[in-house]
Length: 163
Image (tube, rainbow, N blue to C red; front, side, top):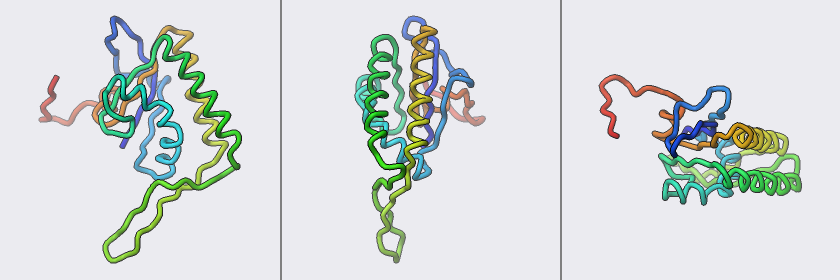
């Protein structure tokens, strides 16, 4: 599944999209290592998904935004995550589940994660959050169908769009 986190200007709680290309991060959790980093950080932000989308952050077609006091709380969450990751080893494996192909034994999915990469990701999220605070913008997260709109990807010809 594809995800995007970026900055958007807010006017009367209407989102303006697409998000600024310079101020967004896109990633695909279809890759197990990326999914490992996503799971490492996502649970800390699940309550925002529950609040705005009324489903968990690991579900499909989730979108939520952070502004005002949410941004201050986000900086605190990122600081807490940085402290937790700082205590971890330089690299570790994280268990994501198992996969079983026909006629084969189940195989554990355990991507190798690196502290330096996790800390860089947290630093990028912190910079994005700080920039939103400084410029009076909001941080927006979206996946699934919301990813298309937030990234400005047009639907294929002949696709019916519901509003």
